[in-house]
Length: 423
Image (cartoon, rainbow, N blue to C red; front, side):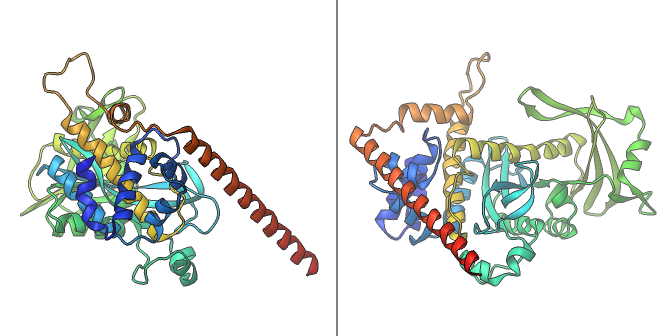
């Protein structure tokens, strides 16, 4: 905990936001049910939420610089030359139309079209652990990037322009490369596998990839003479060519699938494959375009493909353990600051989990998990005892603020009805 705060302390000009940031991260790691400025301020012993709100809105500090510190710290602890970068997006369900980037759009969080924001993230996966190391907020083109008034009201910098989700992933991968993050592979789902610019960037940088694509993707076979749909190729593969491999451990055991691979091109200095995964029970197929500057075995491609689940588990962990989706800010600056501090809190748990494993542990006991580390952290370190007067003060504060908000809503509604009658 002390190292986490020390790592980023230099990014804060004044002592008050520096202190508030440390309390904010402790609050995100605490057992507080809802991680809002109000609840975190109450836990920190503040009389009101203003210091926490200033931290996210107006205090002078650079969220991108703190993000870089978090990434560098994680690389020091988890770095491995065969690391995998995983890119994916997650949704944050929101009400109203004022939150930056919000619109009705499909989000996997709800499994349907909902009013939401979408963040694109980059995870770093190595044998030592996995963590989120970068983030970008996706701004829809028609409803946001083409509306300068909305961008200005949300505090979006003038230099920010529309970028697709794969383009945001390219920005984060380039930043990781420029920062010297050690990795050899990139993986992602169909949104990213379908983008030719992303694949071209990785090939130019000599970074291997295993990117999911749809069943209607066409690839060249027979030395490039024939263009065939990938699902048609799967139907032609003999039963004996399918191999069973595990793409990583799951909650209920190894994730065993049947796999097949087809060489689609081999040139000097590069190798291309189509990787096909088949569910042993349902027969459902998944397809991946693979590229590497050097020959690799099938098991390597399978392992990289399986790394993609890591980022989905990180989203669940971030939202469940450190309140990644609990923010109540609407602007560009507030979103990036809250998400960055949540990533710092998650980094604390990740590093504690990676360094707390005992080589001679009892084989009948599973290794320490992030959830268990957080439970122990709260039991031994973060327990906060506050006087009854403080709790009563915050009860009065909440009810007073709620009464003011209700009165404001009533007045606004009455004003709307009066103007409607006049018209």
